[in-house]
Length: 81
Image (cartoon, rainbow, N blue to C red; front, side):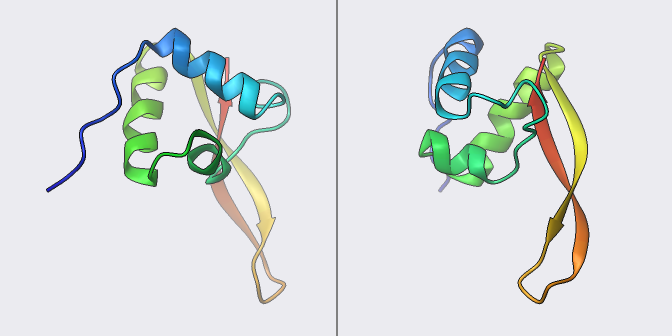
């Protein structure tokens, strides 16, 4: 059984994200750090990010990261607008 999505406004979510990850609306597009910063599971965060994207308040970008074996790969990252 899945947990319910936390109940708060999108403005509150944006404020929490900006407090936890101050550069998220600049060049600091983030990935899984968002779930860690908010203390929610990845599934819950995906739902919340989907709501922000639907409202035009989130941009999905690609970011290069290094994997554990030293290879470069591109992952989805998220930036507040």
